[in-house]
Length: 144
Image 1 (cartoon, rainbow, N blue to C red):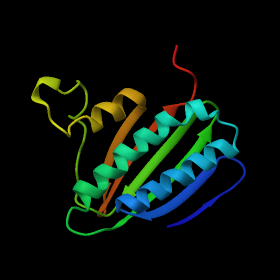
Image 2: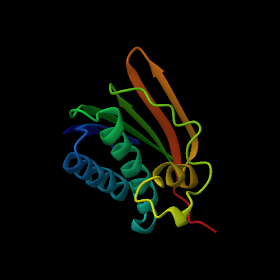
Image 3: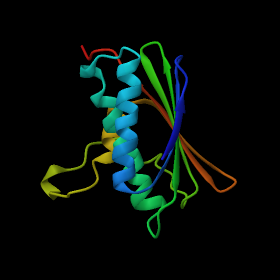
């Protein structure tokens, strides 16, 4: 994994689409947020959303072999703006996660996009020139 950040508001990471590398990247995200004064109690939502999105990339975009995930974070006031880019298989999530999955189905998966949409704002996906780009922002204010 490679990464860099400035002391202002940006973090850029590249990690492999492997679960261990994703966990390491999430540790870097947590450190980045803590170093910029985000209270520990407000870090779980952005980390959960990023974990769900990056895990989806690993499982679906790069289902056959590991590839790179480019993560760009921008801390802007009370929001964390996130951009994930990969070169895996295209996948349009626009129809997913608008409603909670039926718990009666007792499915292990299927909650990821609901979590992403519930905890973030402005979710958008694009696919251009072999790249998938997922953008969203996560509020850092306490939920009232």
